[in-house]
Image 1 (spheres, one colour):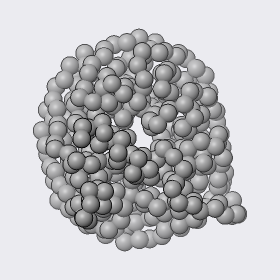
Image 2: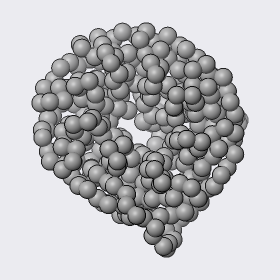
Image 3: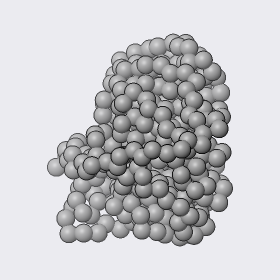
Image 4: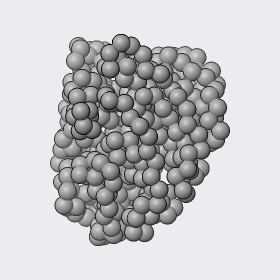
Length: 375
């Protein structure tokens, strides 16, 4: 069985992990509530659809960059006015990374391309080991791109030449997912198939630490899948990773020593803030956990089986999207529903993205929405 068949098989068997279709079991009905806040639309634009890919937008101090399958766009941050639109010449499969004057996208054929943020002119294009399913990231002089086979390439930001490559063996059956990498304090954090997580040095690609989050369990290959299919939640002291059909583990971000573990499954991911870890589990339940112990502080099961995204953090609220294009705002102190907004009816496949004091959301059908929260 080759790599492509492995990904397709896993995607067909685990629809919740692919987050590309309506949940296989009946989703929870949305209950009435008394609003205590409001989700405001600042601006919105219509792009083309993303297909089966998750095309997250990129943001800089000056602009918003977004993509559909065919085109890459630049918009004004404040007004949403389109500045430019280009056609890279390939199917865009990995969302948009931006920074250091560059805009970065990946393709279903393994290309990574860098364009000038100012005018959209191509700076360079290079090939990596397989399709790119997540947004390439840039820090200083290095671009980090992750391939669908789990390999991570460090590329020269000036010309796209490969500086280093991190690779590891993968199991026979893996989940096709769009998790990329997180860069913080000169380290690249990423989770992998078979429940492993690694911190890699940005400069030379050397492994700083590597650890197990979850061990495969069960009698069949399907039961034994315990892949990490979401981004690692990282701040200056702690790195937390969660596996699908597995566990949640928080580590010392620098040394990699495990701090605590908890049996919980998630294909969406988590967010660290202050004393808390906020998490969406595989069933769509949202949790607030004590980051020092993993103890549950509250949980909200009202959005069960609605393919809810990882939570995005506002000062007093959490924002998450679902498979019907609803945005749900929760009080971050007790988990109660504070507001709700319908978008275009298509899935919101990824957590909202930071945009100043607000957030940016892209739906499956290509609606790009700038949001704010008010009381």
